[in-house]
Image (cartoon, rainbow, N blue to C red):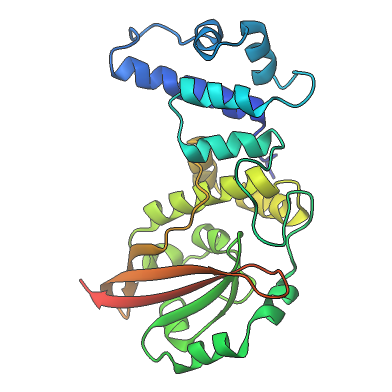
Length: 273
C-alpha cells in the first residue's frame, strides 16, 4: 500500500502560498510566469524570509506563534477553515475549542462508548419515524451508530461502525445511490482533513487515513487541500431510491451526552425530483 500523505504545517503553508500565487495570477496581480516567492510573502507578512523558509521546511525551532500564523493567513487571503487548520497543525487548540470531552492528545471515544450514549429518547425517535431518515453518528469522525428502517431502505449496505467517507469510496452502491457523489465525497474529504488536523495523532484517524489512501480518487481530492470543520445544520443532496431520483434534505445537530461521547444526530426527508 502507498504511504499516505499526513500533511505537515510546512506543507500546508506552502500550499496556501502557491494557491495565493494562482489567485494573484488570475486577477492580474502577478504576471503568468511570476512566482509569489517566499521573499515576497515574508515581506507582506512582516516576517523574515529565512523564517518562512524554515516554516515551510518544518525545520523551525519551537512552536510557531499564533500571531505569525494569522499574518500568513491574511497574506494568503485564506479562509477561517484554513486558519483553524494551520493552528491545529502547529499544536494550538486556540482559537477554536475541540469537541466536548475530547482533546488532540487523547484517542477518540470507542464505538462502544458512543453506543452506550444513545438514550431511550434517541431510539424512540428512530422507532417512531416512519418516512423520515433518522440516523446517529459519532462525532467528529462520522461513524454510523444507529439508524431507522427508512434510512436503511435508502442505504441498505451501510452498517453500524462504518466510517461514512470510507463507504463513499469503498461501496459499489455508493455512486449509484448518491447522485451528487463527487460533491458529497469532496465535502467528506475536506471534513476528513479537518479531523486529521486536530486529531491526526489518534490511532483511529491514522488507521482510517491509511485505508482511504488506497483509493486514487481520494488521493486526488486530498491533494486539492480543501478543509472544513463545521457540519452544515441543513444539508441537501440527491439520491436514487427504488430506481427514481430524489432530493434529500438533512438537518444535523451535535448532541453532547453525559458520557462525553459526542454524537451527531441527523434527520432527513426525501422529495421527488
